[in-house]
Amino acid sequence: MNEKKCHGLACSETSRRHFLSHLSGLAALSAPFTSFANSLVANAEDLKKRQKSAILLWMGGGPSTMDIWDLKPGQATGGPFKQISTSVDGIAISEHMPMTARQMHHLSIVRSMSTREADHQRGRYYMHTGFVPNPNVEHPSYGSVIAHELAGTIESLEIPPFVSVGGGSVSPGFLGTALAPFVVSSQGNVKNLESPVSRERLVSRLQMLGAIENRFIGEKRGQLPKDHREIIGKSVQLMTSSQLAAFNVAEEPTTVRERYGETNFGRGCLMARRLVEVGVPFVEVNLGGWDNHNNIFSTLADQKLPDLDRAMSALIADLADRGTLDNTAVIWMGEFGRTPTINGNGGRDHWARSWSAVVGGAGFSRGTVVGETSVDGREVISEPYSSQDLMASVLKSLDISLDTTFRAKNGRPMKIANGGQIIPGLCS
Image (cartoon, rainbow, N blue to C red; front, side):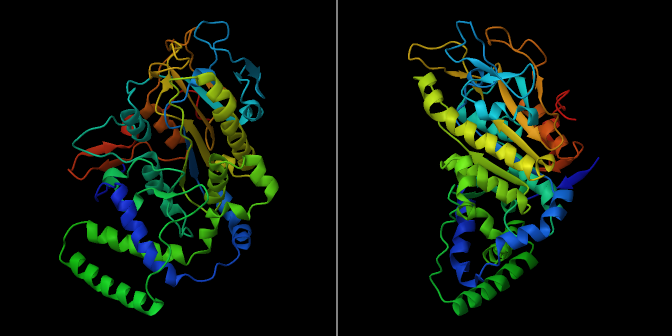
């Protein structure tokens, strides 16, 4: 068994502010950026050969997957949307996802997700970690686990290994503050970059801080001083790195930006592509607004699905065309699905019993449907799969060992992906 002892404090929004507060004083150390394009070209082939990354497209609010990936035409539960054929014979999806339908040969649908957490916060935690919430331990999210396992393989990485675009994510839990999500806007803005002091004074302050931290570390005061020193070092490295330009999607040609869509989600997906190309192991891109208890069909048809379709299809096509899809796992999911029954307000409510997730790239099978729901969508009629099963399959697609065991701060062993099983047929 590959056992790793991982200590550290659980992360919260406070730790993010703590990290960014140091960035505010490090801007004075910034050197002029070298050409991002030249750096990328010089390292692209090597990165393609050895880099593994994951991009999570997180649909906050609980999307109605039976109106997107698993339609039930002709049923009272089915709603008004029609299904259309895709680039894979026998697989049909929503008429409002025509561009993604043309990329279906790169993707696979798990139509038999079945979970028990139908509360937003509990479901969000469960689907990000593979564990149900527990007051005695805070578990690490996908991003922190994958960053922990893969960051060491990218020696040239100078920016945070876990980036969350357009919103926060779940904490690194017992893996420690250094693996917390680095949150940026879809414009690539990192707050608090203006230095209030001169370069000379900043350097002096950093030297003094280093002396204090070294003393605390020498006195064996726990993991926090070591994490703090590591964060400071990474902050300095970040502010002087040409890789910071990966956040700047405005550098992309207008035609590329338009293909992804000039929306927050479109820019986030384009940024994700740029970030994995410089070696970031995990990027989460947030698209909220799926809690559609009212007027769900007009909301999906006019707003949510056009934005999702354009950006997701562009991301998949771009990764494939640029030769990076084979090393990049793409995961689409929310915290649960929505009820087959359409309520009196023309919406669907929370539903965790039968819903879908979508994956692609890396070591996943392509153009496949796994699992089946009943004709009305109310039940899974094949083998049901859990959050931990999906997480185990993602890790497998990235060649991360499922024998890995972490040790929580309280000394309790925690098996990666909570001991989930690989979903049969989902990994090649």
